[in-house]
Amino acid sequence: MKNCFLQTKRIGFSIWSKEDLNLAEALWGNPDVTRYISAEGELTAEEVKDRLLMEINQYQEHGVQYFPIFEAEENVFIGCCGLRPYDFKSGIYEIGFHLIHTMWGKGYAGEAARAMIDYAFKEIKANKLFAGHHPENSASRKLLEKLGFHYTHDEFYQPTGLQHPSYVLKQQPPGS
Image (cartoon, rainbow, N blue to C red):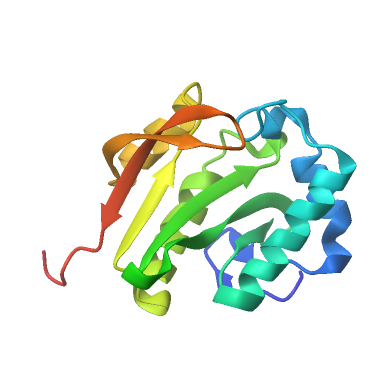
């Protein structure tokens, strides 16, 4: 498996590199995945490459990205899950996950998100996590609520041109 910096029972988290363009194309080049993250419903080959470079730059600048994730036992690419600065000075990060459509419904998104929430609060020392989802993506809404996120407002998301329901998760004090 690609070098992993974080692992759960079934998932390994790696770091995007320029050599991962084929993985980025498999994920963000698939309209089943991008219908909820792009106004056009899909990304061009150039937009996929730009997205990969954006993730690499996020890591270089802030130490976080939407990390590529792999099924640990078989080393199968699942998608990505990670963080990006939302309000960096206030310690607020956005959490997100995009999975290859054949990996939907297997519990990977929840497992990856739980690991990333733990990582955000324990390793990155985030104060809060922000998350949003496409208004038609009920699976993401259900998962965010299950993870303990609370709806706060609708927020305009430029890539889709829509108001996305938005949520916040605050770190719980130890012992609460």
